[in-house]
Image 1 (cartoon, rainbow, N blue to C red):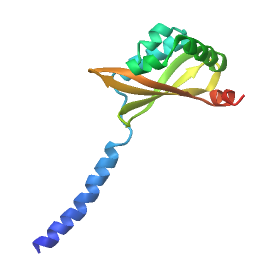
Image 2 (image 1 turned 135 degrees about the horizontal axis):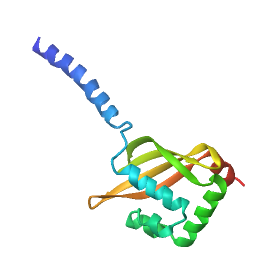
Image 3 (image 1 turned 90 degrees about the vertical axis):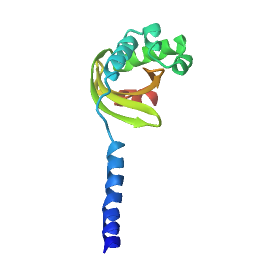
Image 4 (image 1 turned 180 degrees about the horizontal axis):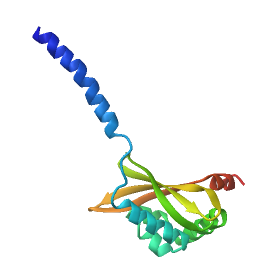
Length: 145
């Protein structure tokens, strides 16, 4: 009798542990730091302010963003999606050691909005942007030209 109780208990416990693990890997709430950093990144991108924008990135990210390319990307973004208006938190999750936070942002020339995917990384107790990726229908359409 005791062995059957152990089997039943293990039979119930294992699926619960698996389910709990899957739930904890799912979406999470907006991290405290994300809103302020994302807003600064979108504002500096909108203003084409290289110094302010690159200061938000990890050292590796800063090394990957040169001012000439930043200016080109900034001009292209503004010509396709217009000026930044506002953003709203969409989702957050952990992915490959990064905290990935998505915002849906409103731009003057993109009626469907733009999803910005921020990859955050912690370095010495501070959060930085490791990478940033915009997605929208107009940006997709313009990249095929």
